[in-house]
Length: 116
Image (tube, rainbow, N blue to C red; front, side, top):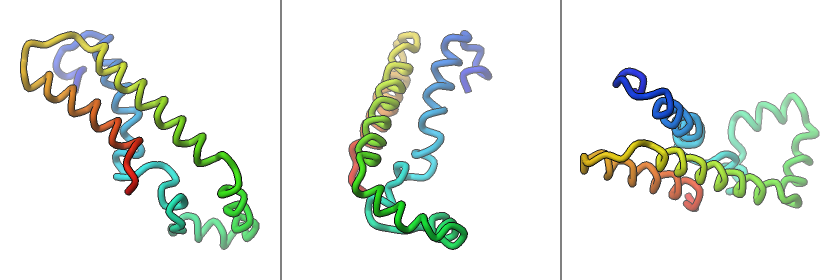
């Protein structure tokens, strides 16, 4: 969108950085590993366990490790990078632009703090 609206390369890069982060978890509507964290084994995991039965014991190690906590920390780091990318966009006197920026930043915060 930034490229098609004749924005500077810096603005386009900031928009790309925002989209790059939200294009994963946001497009799914949930965070990475959220199903596993809730004890839900999804189809991709079931199929992988059929091919590699040892994965079942790997899931037990997942619960014993700091893997989930480290994943949360990484998500927070990327949310902060997204907020910084949005903040680096040029100022606008347009109230809709200002509201949209605040909404996007709030969205990144919601994605890393939600429980469901």
